[in-house]
Image 1 (tube, one colour):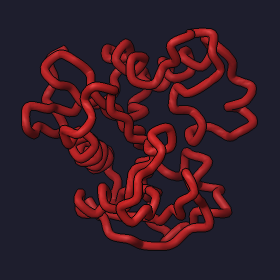
Image 2 (cartoon, one colour):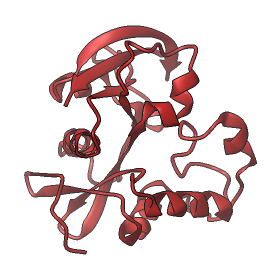
Image 3 (cartoon, helix red, strand yellow):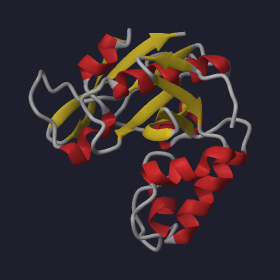
Length: 200
């Protein structure tokens, strides 16, 4: 799989989640038990009813089909040949966020959303989330996005439960050049979520 990385930093590279990289997508977001009805990073990608009804192996098949589309479902971070991170990124108009009553639309620009950032256990604390976020922005820009949004927690330095940390923190987004654009009525892990934005 020879391709030009979206981002290269500190020995890490970020690539779009193409079909050729589907096994790495599975490593990052597929459940240990393939018959499980969880994750595959679908909870904010498809309507809640569809997410509940999509069961077992069909969930993986749905994501595999996404990797075959022209616009890929996210980006992957690598340390050498080893996949170490995932970030979901897509046009907000194609996501349930488009109809959210809790997370406001800032303006009429066709924003892209980054809503899930995951780093593999054993690789945390190396700045991989920062590289992933830069890669997600680079991919959105490559696909014509004028602006990218995230909906992280405003935790003010307090510890966020690891199971809910995938939404990111306000500081993570600020460090990547995002600015706070709006408050929301949404919460995660007991913390308020905010709309962070960055033009591309």
